[in-house]
Amino acid sequence: MMFENIRKGVASASTVSSVDAQDTLATPAAVSALGSSCAEVAARQLLAAQLSAETIDLQVIDINPANWSDSSLGCAVEGRFYDAIPQSGFELAIDYNGDLYRIHSNTFGSQVINCIN
Image 1 (spheres, rainbow, N blue to C red):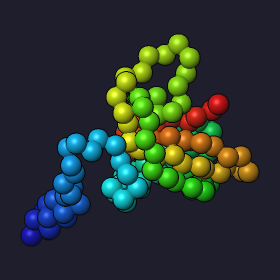
Image 2 (image 1 turned 30 degrees about the vertical axis):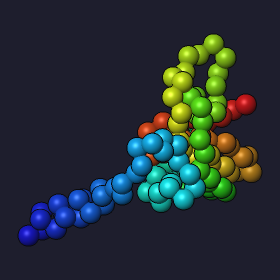
Image 3 (image 1 turned 90 degrees about the vertical axis):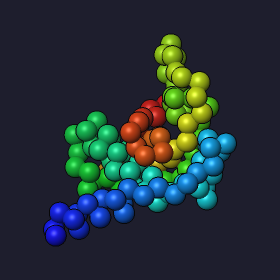
Image 4 (image 1 turned 180 degrees about the vertical axis):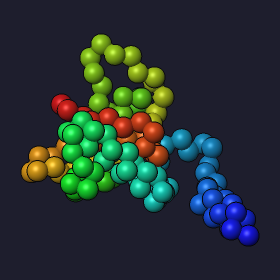
């Protein structure tokens, strides 16, 4: 019975509402709470690793839906190639010891970039 309840919980948590295939970019109304939570976790982990800090010491100041024209997520580095595929995601502002960091993420946090520019 326990494993059946776990399976039901995973199935329930994995349910994704339908999205119009024509709408490839996120709008504020279409961005899910799950996506922003995933992006926040990924951004905290990236920044904590870069700063040798604990994730609990990082304070998310702001998180907003965003759309970018390519896979650089708005943080292009000169000389690098980026896929020219529109990307949806989040812009996060994270404070650590009074310093503000700008992190960009795709929709579910599988790609996160510290925009140090």
